[in-house]
Image (cartoon, rainbow, N blue to C red; front, side):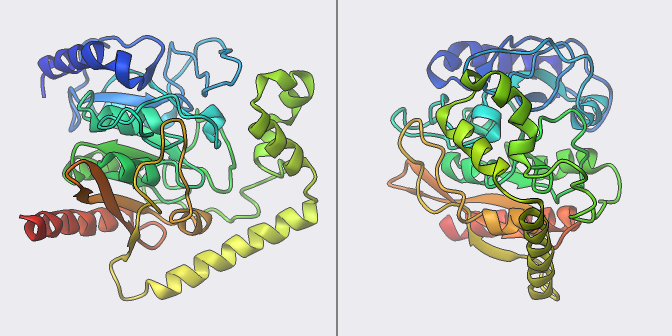
Length: 346
């Protein structure tokens, strides 16, 4: 990859994003890239993830934005060190929740790319960038990948540090990525993972903050209730009503879910499921995460692989799920699946 690829990406964004709406804030040429396996890859970063010098507005309902971040999130630092060229921030649904999706579907203007990693999925699908980062708390990486017809990975919970990432529900939050091909996902994931995945204890990892989304946003909700949309404000209020005992019971359920899923995965490469419950939903809607929530709850890695198109237009995808910490092995299985899908459709 050379600087020409960055220039081409910037030209495509300038030509197409007024209609697509995948980006938020400035989109610029970051200059020379570091030498490494991702050298010159144009990269988008979901606006829940810190990029040095840019504000992390997190899709705030009232349009407010904090001061620019003083440092890159750890995952961004790793990708930059490997040569990725960060062009800017991609649109996100409000705080990674179930709000209105502002980005349009890259193939059908009356459809949504899904949420909450809407801008990242749409930008890769539209050929604006080679790869983009996302986050998932329910189905926010895999579901938009299915709707937009692009490969994506949600890494195992705890496998990539969340330092510099806006939390939604820390016991569930995971990072992930979209790329132009499964092979690109493999290359990017090898850099992002960087070390042997860590298996956090689901109770001690949560620490003192409880009720997750409510705890993250409660102080600001009390001080500035108008900062949040009605739906997120209601979720915060509901979360604050959950007792510590019920919260700890939910975390024990999560541990049991992981154990049950991993028992089913012994001796197999992956579990194959639909990646989404439907085709891309109407414009503005995030879509249902029902196909993704059980595996996110268990903290397992997942990969979306485009499988077909309906009427030659709207994509459908399969989801491959593996045991915790088997991210790169799962991606190898996904690469095989992508080849076989192409062969069957040929």
